[in-house]
Length: 315
Image (cartoon, rainbow, N blue to C red):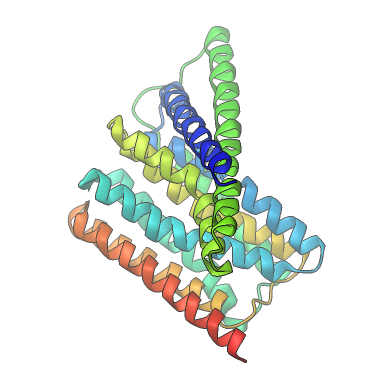
């Protein structure tokens, strides 16, 4: 019966939206506590926490001897984040104007994203490469956290207790948000199967569903005039996946991605990152034309994936 999964999807979406609002509120309070920008706070906290599902999948896959599977999940997630999610957010907002600090961080993000690509030139991400990726991520986050606003962080026992409270509520909000997104994804998958849709379509539904928390979080943040939070969350997720998650997987088992999709997707992540850096460096703005182009890239990626899957079935 299709009605029950549809009702569960609606319930899951409601939970996701409410928890996204709560997470935004707590992140803003934490940003004020540490005198950090909204972008930095969202990047470090929400972005890094958001990679836990991909990290779990990647670690389990690596422990079972299938590190390339974990790598594929991460790269696919990054493609969706940088094309579909950023594209939808920019189209929804109409125009995102970025300050100089955010532009600087985005440029640094590009350098971080291409590091796994450089290490992949020998067609393997080794354990040594994994150490390099994890160390580079630690350095990047350290530099990011040093870029504080003017003034000192809030001091005192009462302030510290307040921070612990805010952080605890943030963790709970994000945990419920992910649970709501999982509910939506699982039931969307069930609806697709009940309607007899192709497995490729089901796979797309699942992949997009895994990025639902970032999408809803970013849209709600822009609604509240805090787009820096949304963008920080997306880029934090992409960078943490590209460096920390891939690094940990490579430490467990060196990664030798299967051809052709993972290498193509890796190149696409680098190309889209370079395109975003070019746009923001040119005039500090992401507009609807940019958003539409990113969505076009996402559609092109889906078509490419469908062609490859069809070719595999044909042979």
